[in-house]
Length: 325
Image (cartoon, rainbow, N blue to C red; front, side, top):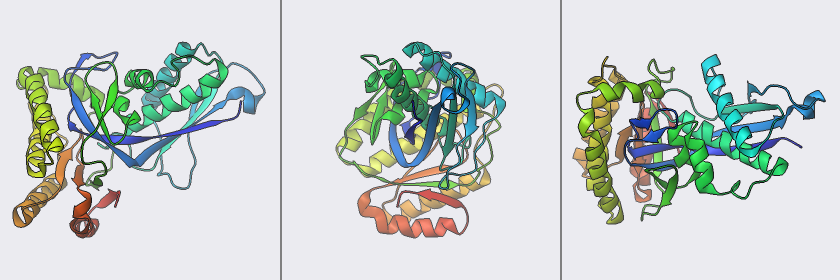
């Protein structure tokens, strides 16, 4: 069997996934809503070991994928083992026993709050499904709900990366949603590209000890209903206010956990403050959110492209910007 290559995008949650009912299966405590970032992607290539070693069987191996359009990429030993464990689970699901070389790379920085695990595990799941369907095809092997559920077990938020542009996740799998905003413009302002000291997986555990966590599910569910209505009615300002409150809610959980921790930096606050001033001056602006990291995500309507481009030029003089403009 020849090599199989698959790619999957990152996504940014506007209603956040933070907290698990079952850590092992990444089952969320509350509903989450995300916008898919098609320009931030992970590519995975899977090659049977028999194709390059002349043998059948053997252990699965991970290696960085060398591609000219990818950023420098590496996985820690722990990261590699997590990736390979998910791949082994997928092999068992399809009844595949031979060994593979798994290569992967991103076109954006990893482990810094840009949901690289979402794109990585979604791409791995899609590549594995494509490869294993050729070896031992299953009737559910191309069903997106099933693949979303399988991907979730490796990285919770990855289940949303199988859909574009909007994805809803509240149970075992994600599913698509439709809003009038079918194509938003995205900018990720990279104020910190180094690896996070507290991983997202660890953050999920720590926030359960926050004094604010008991009311978290109700707050998230209420904001989801409000945001769904504001997006459907194209009330952009209300959407901005809901998204703003939601990411601060999540970061308040971080700051009040036991022990407390923070992702925000002076750079994060600078971007937030200046984007708020932009809103105040113009009476319009982007949706602003942050993931579990220091970097800031801005989402603009297509008709805001000119102002988004002007803001992008401003931020490029200070920080690195990953943009879909």
